Length: 306
Image (cartoon, rainbow, N blue to C red; front, side, top):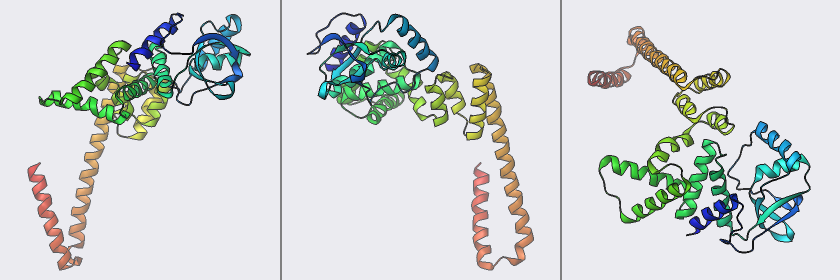
């Protein structure tokens, strides 16, 4: 019920309708110095170019849409939604900003912050994925790791033709309902297309957060095991704006090269050991010869089994 109320509140807020989903609310202007940024802001990256454009717009027109805050102690306010506008307003030199004040507890504040950002569609793929997981976590009352496990559990059960217990089915229904309300994804598409992003290396996550590359391209580059190969291809992909098909072609070539190098290394190691046995055979102690013989028998079995 709390989730539905939060989504309804955000929808009305965005259409500038004075809503009554939460108590103690009104519109006014307050000093920008009284507004504190939230430590749980879903957005971690703000595009410098877009921020500069917003600064110029605010200098000319002011803030057209109020930011959402909740009251703190000593007349201070915590920002719930609108950090980009607050950042731009400060750069533009505004002294006061329009607000919508709501009386919210911590959970309500976080839910509205997440939903408002998701509805604006301004989050990058990584931030969006993390925000949705956090929203699901709040809705179900479990941590995000358990949410991820739940999504994988559904997939695995479906693949194996297994039945899920009633509690799991109820949780999955809540998840589907949330996706439906947000108008984004479903359980299957979110698990398949977004959860893999969280396993990407830190360098790929960084460029994704900055919007320098599409997440499908980042996923393809992320399939390379070599850190050096990933870094080099990532640099080229961004600099030359390579298409997804071009990246796939290069990844395939690099994997083939790596496989061949691995096979060559294996052959070289085998030949080196064989040469060493011939050179040092007469120096090897009887006890060690027995161990080597046993290892060679195991090696023979492994090679025979393929």
